[in-house]
Amino acid sequence: MTDRRAQLAVNLAQVEERIASACASAGRAREEVTLIVVTKTYPASDVRILHGLGVRHVAENRDQDAAPKAAACADLDLTWHFVGQLQTNKVRSVAGYADVVQSVDRVKLVTALSAAAGRDGRELGCLIQVALDAGSGARGERGGVSPDGVEELAVAVEAARGLRLDGLMTVAPLAGPYAGRQRAAFDRLMEFSSRLRGNHPAANMVSAGMSADLEDAVAAGATHVRVGTAVLGVRPRLG
Image 1 (cartoon, helix red, strand yellow):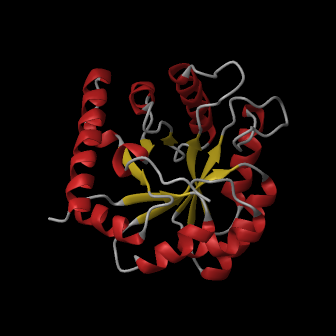
Image 2: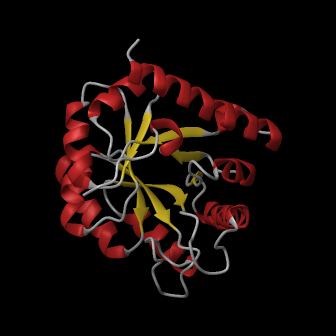
């Protein structure tokens, strides 16, 4: 076993233990929570090692890094999630490899994703990113639509060819009433999820929580957690 494989195996086991413990504390089955490993800034070789260790969901937040990495790992049975803020000029590329886009936050993006999915003959899962720090009609500092814009986007996604409405995503906000209150933020997201499922029953995916706060997300009811640093280590500084 290589040093890198050994390191990732230990880290992954620790994260799995944290998720299992959080599920037990919340009275949930471990199978209710899917681990997505965020592999941004790390090479395709790490993705291959993670696949060999049983990981099946990986995430990226920059198309320029994700596209070549996904191509290099095209032979692996992986579900690729795009989790970063997405500009419309990158949509065609992202739609070529992503299975789920977790950062849908405006109608213009829905239109572009639909056109790209239709062109490629693919179906893209979409999560609406909810910004808990955004006022009515505004976008969040880290992307996302204000809570009062969720239903409009949900209707747009459901009506769009090639797109599938899967649920909601949030990033714990750095400002506003939920700053530093991750559990409260994730509880609020679950309230929005319950409301969304009233009109869109199949949209039951809730993506929340990262390395530092995955326990809070599991306790609140998240179905997916996005973990990078705790599995892959401290990221190298860019530039």
